Image (cartoon, rainbow, N blue to C red; front, side):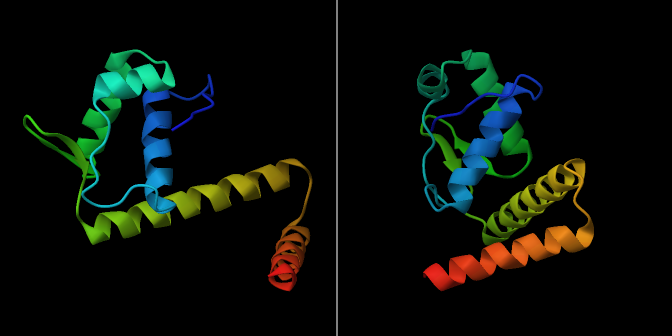
Length: 125
């Protein structure tokens, strides 16, 4: 895990988002053990309290479960995984559209660019 932190966004939320991305990409699966809070804090160079908050928030959101004396694990719940994927996709699309609009593109231009790029990808496969 390597995070390029954004100062305008709470670090603990960025940690949560990175873990969600790893789940969506298949790098983490249901039942996988997360690093200890201290180990992750050292790895990404943040305060251990920040990682503790991220883990606590993920547990409250039903993303992970902590097993006393064993560690924190990705929750084995298919519905949670589906919801994470939908949420991440919705956020990515929304951010993309917001950015395109801020660059002055109209709906038709945005759709055209997306279609062109998808076609180009299909042709390259």
